[in-house]
Length: 134
Image (cartoon, rainbow, N blue to C red; front, side, top):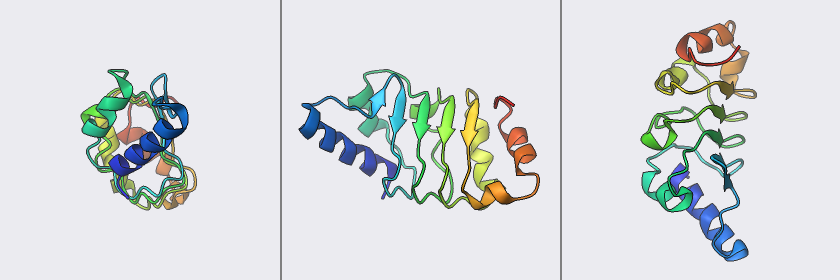
């Protein structure tokens, strides 16, 4: 399942239960935990009708099936400050290189991914993401 599909599914679900209000996008936070997402695709169309110009600053993608973060640097996430991708399938440091394009990123959670068990992975992540708070 792609990220845009998960957003559409959550939006439709919330629209039925909350009369059109999207409870999982609040104050710049997008929560898509445990949605079966395996790919981050272009979400500009899906997200534009949901956030009315509010920048997404926090993104929760934990407990999905992501092997890489390709696509995370798209325009919709340019203001991302906090990213949680814990408990996914990210195995290699090179899969994190794209995070260097997220210049506002301050907090990153990779717990539960194979990459987080590699020797010196924290140092390598800090070299990739120079804006992360230590």
